[in-house]
Length: 181
Image 1 (cartoon, rainbow, N blue to C red):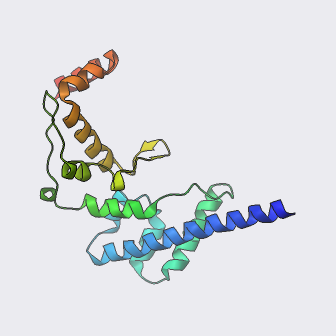
Image 2 (spheres, helix red, strand yellow):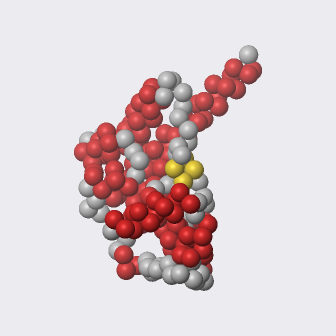
Image 3 (cartoon, rainbow, N blue to C red):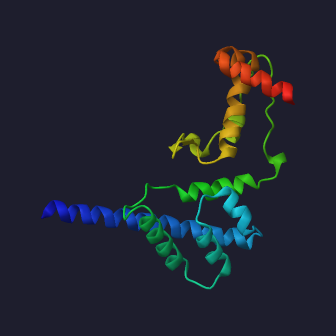
């Protein structure tokens, strides 16, 4: 009996945490709306259900209610199981970074030879708090983070070494792609 109760309590805590995270994220989405973001811009940078974002933009409902409905829908779509935790707030932070003017970030240009990175460059081109993550087979939270980190690493090891470590098949594909451009 105690084990069943513990399982029920653990499930309720997981669900509560997801609802809280979703609620916080939707509050930030509301702020993004106030900053002039469109639904499309939010959906391009944050992996949230379109219905939830649209409901926030409509401003007719309590955000907590939208969060609860969204989490309940995700549980239903997941066969009644609570989905894996997602760092929604991280995606919102990425959204803000995504729309940051390009001049705020130093452009790194990888050369043939390796180049040293400064701490500031590393901080600008690596994920938030330098945390690496894998979610549903995707490294890092979004494409922009992956692009920034790859450029920083290739900048640091140099193009010559990068090509040297590629498998033969990858080199052939890369050569073909470069010839197409």
